[in-house]
Image (tube, rainbow, N blue to C red; front, side):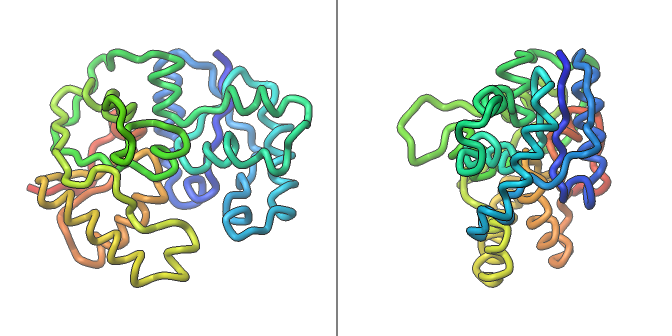
Length: 253
């Protein structure tokens, strides 16, 4: 399968290893992966602020760049949801848009639903891991069950992590609560954002986690900042890094 790798701009600038880990993982699983260098921000910051006209050229560029691929894969629930749920404002009726929506996947969604991964050969991660479920992933992409819905339990990230030898998923008291980041919310409502983040960190601490993982590096960036300021012995890792065989740089002893 020829895959176009869509890397969010903040991942490209601040966490390039997440992009490299995603590439390595997909190639290991047999995908022919291409990173189109002309890709830009998906336009989510503009859309979240109500600046739809400023977002439209980025959406049009995205469609032009990724239309040739069989699948588009992104290691971010929020950026994937931007394409599949919110580009409608800019691209409705344009040729190829419906096909683009149907073939654009968040990483864990692609691994479970398209590649149907059921094993990772030789992968070992001997650490206690807390799984943070991002809001966009749960409530727009339906990557897992959210507590407000009465439906059978499922979680695509957990499904993959349970395949990793030595990895112990710790039970959280509030497994689908927001971390408080929310993009510009973390700036406009700094105090509330920090308190929400500290609540999430505490939940992972009380569960005995050594590593916090998630499918959105934006959530982890927020939590990591709080962890560093509090000097807590917790590591944060994107799920792509774990599945690609990385080990935590810092973990509780």
